[in-house]
Length: 124
Image 1 (tube, one colour):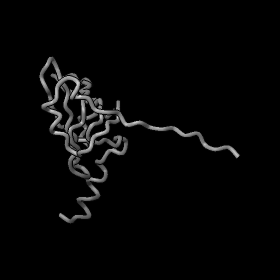
Image 2 (cartoon, helix red, strand yellow):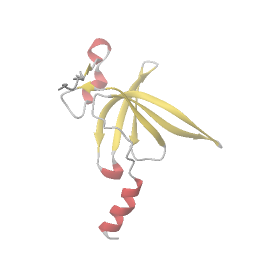
Image 3 (cartoon, helix red, strand yellow):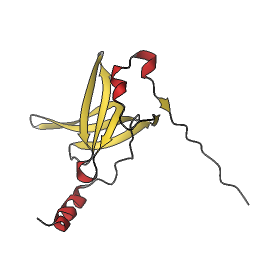
């Protein structure tokens, strides 16, 4: 199969409405779940540990604490099973993969929020 044909097929599958995410961001992933004949949307909210891959195979690993137990899920950004991504908070971390976050509890598990400064346009 030629690379050009493969590129055209995958380009049609890539979502354009996915927000830019980096490690440390708090996101809510709206995942479609099929149970029996019914389909519903379940929200999985947690911290992004890593963003991996490019193009159609781009994935994001999200971690949350549920009833005292850490739960991690890997979501394919371009999957039809993902309804949408919402970035709740932008986190400031120094690494692109924050695996050390798994061992953190309590106050040491905090991630600083990125300050976004809004400037008014100058008149005149």
